Length: 489
Image (tube, rainbow, N blue to C red; front, side, top):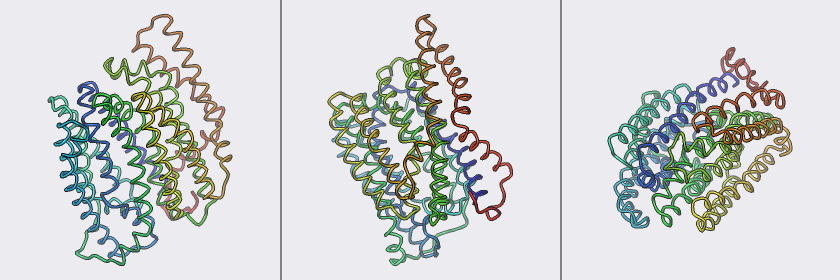
């Protein structure tokens, strides 16, 4: 398994680097080319469009990955069920585009949402092939596909923006990436569906997927609620400012563990009877994630005004406090992204579902309260809930693994110390640079370089375990054996 995991992490890491860098670059370019109003119109649509990821396969794909043995009835049944769900929600999305536009009070939303509704069926077409490749841990194929789809979407989005397409640039980017991804995954697998549908298979798989579907639905509902409320009560310009901060800071960094998460889910499913082994990998992986996200996000909190001025432009100045607050949220969320997959692999999806119910209600309540203070209030309310519930999420996972949350705290202590010390040094250096009236571009470049120079030796000193994990991962990658050669992770 070690060889499969290491190779998967390398391919997932490469793909995620391309994906997240592309996402940030495209978001920055579009922020430069579009007005906050245009960006906000697309944001109103995209927050609802997130549900394509939930409804495209009704979480049956996760059941295909988790199940120890599959029949062709299982595969074909999931394919036709997913395709039917995708078609239904595409039609429903088109039908609801008018009422959604009325809800927002923006007639321009109607055609945008009708077009984006195609993502439901486009995603469902490739959902089973994607699940089967994930189950086989064929991450090279999956990530080559993801890289190609991401780059195609980026090219289309930027081209449309340069052509003056406004909000359509973001919709075009999303649809292109989904369509290319689904088309490519068919060329990478030999399996093809047959005209067979088994109710027994659907009932058997549905027992697991029902909890996963409910968890995902609540997760994406919570992720969408802030944008929907801002669009309804504060208007498209406010959505645009909030969405820029969300797309550049919260999503890329909160999903930085995505490659690890997707590789480890099938691995955890195969290790589910050895919980101590899973716990050890969980702590080590969280430490590696923290070693990357913590200095980056603490540094962003310090340099946010310079980043916005230099990279986005002064028209986005009102995004600075939102970026700072969401950087804190992203820091907490980045450390918890593996928890749901561990609980699913341990067949405790019900536990995660109950947690997500609490998480959704708490976030929705906080967003409604935060609206009284505008987008900064919404972001602050999000941060308060995250500060309470993300540690609770970690505690649930630790309990399921039969370990202590204190083990996690000890594992992260060195990285936390190094990152906080770096942030203090960079903050002091920024004040000195402001005192001598250093230009914003030079100040930003200097502070980023200083952060690297200060953090790397501090991390090596205070967290030698993280350094050992990284060097060990590189060493194992170079000498990775076939999957069956070494059963230890």
